[in-house]
Amino acid sequence: MGHVGNAKTYRDPVHDTIDWKQEGAAGAVVCALVDTPELQRLRFVRQLGMASLVFHGAEHSRFTHSLGVAHVARRMAHRLWPQQDELDRLSIVCAALLHDVGHAPFSHVMERVFSFHHESYSRAIVESPETGVHALLSRVDPSLPGRVSALIAGEGPRAHAAVISSQVDADRFDYLMRDAYMTGVQVGRYDLERVLLLLHADEDGLLVDLRAWEAVEGYLLARYHMYRLVYFHRTVRAFETLLERLFARARHLLLEQGDARIGLVGGALGALMRGEAVDVRAWSRLGEYRAWALIDDWREHPDRVLSELASGLLDRRPLVWRERAVETPEAAAREDALAERVLSELTPQERFLFAVDEARHSPYTPYVARSTAGAGGGVRLIDGTGRITLIEHKSPVVRALGDVALRLRRWFVHPMILDKVRRVAGDQW
Image (tube, rainbow, N blue to C red; front, side, top):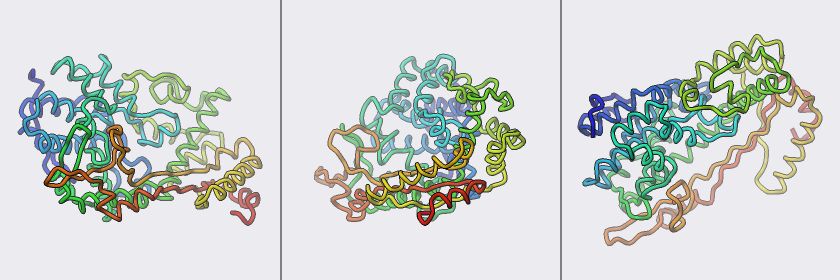
């Protein structure tokens, strides 16, 4: 393994000391990757999108999260495979570090706006000879970019891929702890040390010692509460919907009306707005500062819808919301019909000021034998005799979580059209 620089020690608010010096040459590779332009860009991509407008401490970035995921993945690999081949371990740690390198500004919000998946850009950045990430990985070992890209895609050895993506992966372990810490939501905390201490692996993926089932239960409950209290918080979703509506209006003005005042000439954001392919070099320069500068310009745009939406974000004025009943198929069908009636009464401009938002999440997906290494793989427990059981069979709480599917539908309405929407909806408002 060639010399690529020196290993470093990082101070982290969640994990305290992250010391890569003890990893020798592999630690130096990780630290060199941290300093590539593609990883440094993640300093300008917030981890929780618009959540900082509700939880004022949630200013952390995808960069800090990525360092945390690499640290947890390193600990998992040492626990599971203490005699592991150095290149295999480095592949796992690098995949953990780079799994989010393709994220766009505002995290998952922009994926919903422009219909793409950040994983495809993460893999492209790893695989493209034009990036600093690829150049560094190739210099260490020509096979390393392919190994890392495969693990990000959930391919390769099942247990290795499960460290990157599963129901007990390094990504979830870090973001739950980090997001709970930064938002101040105490019920998002859980006993990571107990889970890591009693972690196991086999050819089907990861398992946890039966003695840690309470810790796993606590982890899954923490995840449930974080979705309820943070990720699906009504005001967070209100601002995310406001951002979606803003970019939808800007895109309409640009493409349908040829409005040059939108200000998108080049770069990845302009290409996304025009529906064009984005090359990895342009993507690697895409930060939230560019998006916020445009939003600030749009505040003064003569199009009232665009300027009102931009001002709402910058001045923290969320959309008005109403929770909608979708507990049964019949209720959901009535809601769909009512929303269609409201939309039919709105002018083309006003439709950018109204949205039906539906947030869905399954807190726990029961295990299916030989499933993929991804989120559907469940959590298996193993006892001292080697007998394997499922967490939902041991924990009534997890069994209940397996039957719960969070489905929150809300209407979000701009105050400009609130009276009209109320009038059309009538007593169903």
